[in-house]
Length: 235
Image 1 (tube, helix red, strand yellow):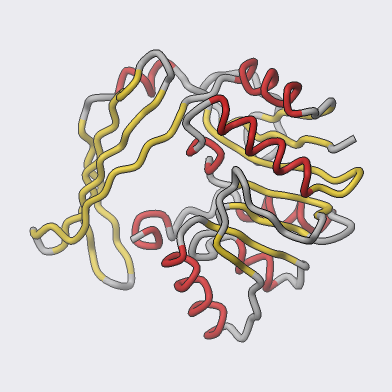
Image 2 (cartoon, rainbow, N blue to C red; image 1 turned 60 degrees about the vertical axis):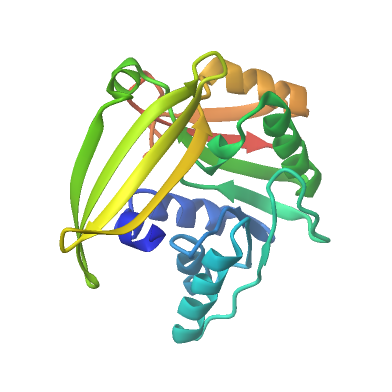
């Protein structure tokens, strides 16, 4: 279902390929899922490892890799407490996966765990959207989208709403239709994080230097409508 809904999203791929090529050492993708980005890195010959909390998604990644004659090094892991013997020159967390940490404690545990797995001088790169006013005003309203894939056409209905306004936790309910019938339904939750809030989290986790951009083309962050792209150094 991930590939049906998000498989055509490519906006971030060139950015992460460019940054991983700069890494002088091993790379870890956290939340590698079915391999939307991970397999692109492997095709470039980048020394890439991956973890994901979903064993089912990793099975899909491995099936794709086999068909492409690639050899993935992926394992099931929770970003808050995974333990790998490797230390990485770069850890990437694409497509807003960090937002699945719903509490401040989980956010700090995750950042500290990333720092523990970074080599000296290594970098952490991740992205997530700014909690803008227009987006929040849309919560509670249902959206519809037609998705055209090589597996057929699907209708997607989504509705996001606050389940905890004080702690900024959002739940999204999604239903996928095919031929007028329900094909799949599911729910997921994420927590909104503001720029200054994340800067405090980074300081508490022990990071001292970072750069923030307003998109994957390295433009300055000047608007709440931009995607926040963080490049964090492990000094």
